[in-house]
Length: 403
Image (cartoon, rainbow, N blue to C red; front, side, top):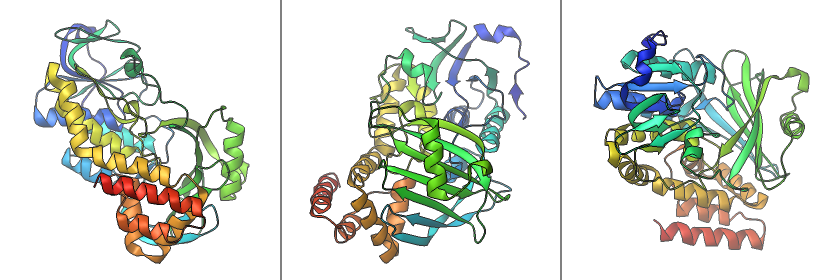
């Protein structure tokens, strides 16, 4: 994979690193790349419990927002060899459909490939990758220790939805209503022109199934829903996936379930030398489930802040608010607005009638957009019930209040 991967004397376990990153997925790799971009020669340690390449349950969709963020980190083409997908098809719970071309194409790259490329880029830049399952971090006046084995001036916790770094900080997991569960699989791609498909379900709403073509004859398919109380069984996730997409069970391969902590409930980042990025920071869009852009963006912001040492927490909190705060507030409002199937129907019909509404909804769902008064008002105009209209009007007032 290139760079300094393993094979390092055990002596490095007792050295003081400038920055240690727990988790080498997109958030962790981005943090390492940002540190080394700002301070070439910095001593950066990447810790991960897995060997790369490794699989990661995900929709595998790579939005142009993530690619721009990676280009800024010096990774110009992490999707090389994969075909762009220009069209998106949305089906609402009530059967409304919109098919349009997106402003920028998306890519579908299995995380086994995508993540390994980012780790390789970080190691080529000078990061050192060790295989280690982190369980505990402890902060001291001048350093942070990981399991009593590694020490660094600052630590970025990018270790996913079940983050051990987050637990060590005493941060509670997301409560019911602010975490989703999904099942991902691979299946033969549908025939015809490649397009991303999202089918919204009126059952167990909010919930949806997806089918994203990779370009090699396969598609990443899956189904997810927000947890509302009782646990969701793997059997039910599998049944809903096959029902909504019309795929026989025996056509599915590599089925894996995963949790998605949504940004509608994200922890306040504390002062100090330990930062949380990506899924560990509950940075998953509650409107769409998108997470890779937020992982890369927050990882880069955390990497820059980590160089402040004791002031890292404050610097990171301010950077997140400046770069993502307004967008994240709007995605929370959008998720609440779409909390009724009737409003989801209205939103899809509005997108079918107006390219601008479609574009704004895609931007809102992928990483940079805002819920504009135009999109809200066009959706309200197609709402089927008085209750939906009242809810959407309240959401519009909240949007305007924070414009």
